[in-house]
Length: 302
Image (tube, rainbow, N blue to C red; front, side, top):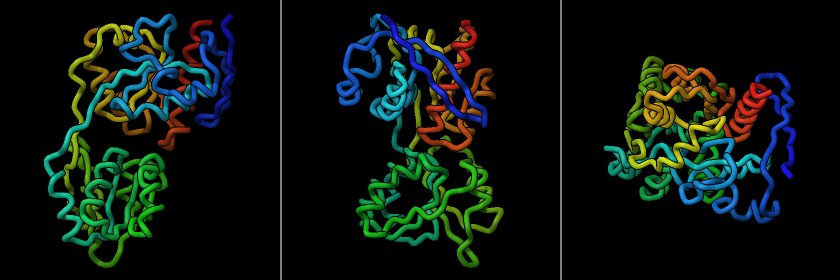
């Protein structure tokens, strides 16, 4: 017999109570948590599963496990459909030498992928002392392990009051008369960071260390399941653009749950109407937004 789970979340300052029904579980909670890859989501190899996933997760393959596990705690089944993949940027090879040959007042990191790429180059440069400003908690978490093992050579010292690039550029503290900033970023990131900081008198060097490209081959059976799911999650403007391209002329009008405001703004520009996002990026807020989107969908079915 199917069973129900009640979820209660507090996004946007109002309490939601939704009753969502799920299929029977085939494994115990302990085995489910121990095998996210096998038990907690549907992938291309399991596209003929006898249940319909509620949420589509779209990050690069191998980077969806945390969200899948968090949603499994609410008994929500996921479908994995990677929409983008990362590739080296034009400046990646130069980053280690720039770090070893120069001293910067700030390193500005505005995404988890930018943080991961930076850490590899920082280690290759001999782990020089760096002070890092991050856009939010999700990006900061990339540095947690490195901070514990680096003997204070890596210092995450700033995050803005609101997790956007615009606010970061407005609030990043000045150090001396000419504050120097290294900004390793995606080739597709906007110019608002360097433009905002330059207007305040900062000396900014931007390096395009990675880029994102749409996944070329999408399993059509998996895509069919994704189109039927109530909620699609996206973690970057590139991902929502890739989803839009996959839709073609389809009249898809289900919900998009974005990791943060920047991605949500892109979703709205592309014409999506049912857009949800947390005020502060991070896994917990993202999950709450997904639950809200599912709750709204469930209410429409009543």
